[in-house]
View 1 (cartoon, rainbow, N blue to C red):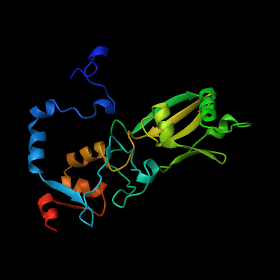
View 2 (view 1 turned 180 degrees about the horizontal axis):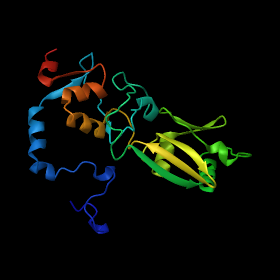
View 3 (view 1 turned 90 degrees about the horizontal axis):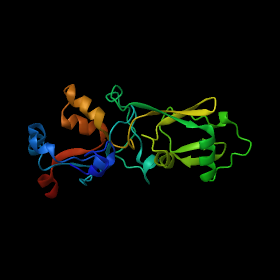
View 4 (view 1 turned 135 degrees about the vertical axis):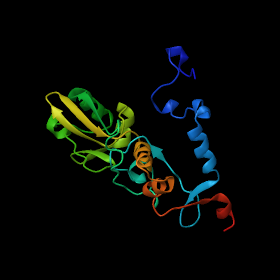
Length: 213
């Protein structure tokens, strides 16, 4: 509590306050879940502990690790996720003046000489790594950070002197989709089901059994 007391509130709605450990001590559902899964780990086919990233909402399609970080990992593949598509963070819109976008592209080293606003249109039916204009490109992760977008999963259309960013999801999109997992649990899937849906070719086991191998 009181992390942002200087601004007049306790918690923000961004990743800075993503893990709030206070009231969880009073929630028996959380306490029971922790106790029932104590010692449980997820490993790959070589019995190595896996990296288990998560995000708020994937927008219906998770991302490969190479789109966000350096390389692909075999247990983190692109997955179509129907469970999160009716959640609050499934879609978003942001409007940016064309002139602001042009100045930004120049800052990124993109030559827009002779370009028209129609050239800034961008369609992303599936997750990509780069925003392309002619034969030039900008990392989508950079665009997301610089413009404080909810995700890199967006398309761009033009309305006069305004670019309309229509996006899907909230977060990097790799691994477990939190809102999708919540919906899976709500309709009756077990935590084993959920883990195997978002992380492929893995095994759920107790760490003591892993250490004996």
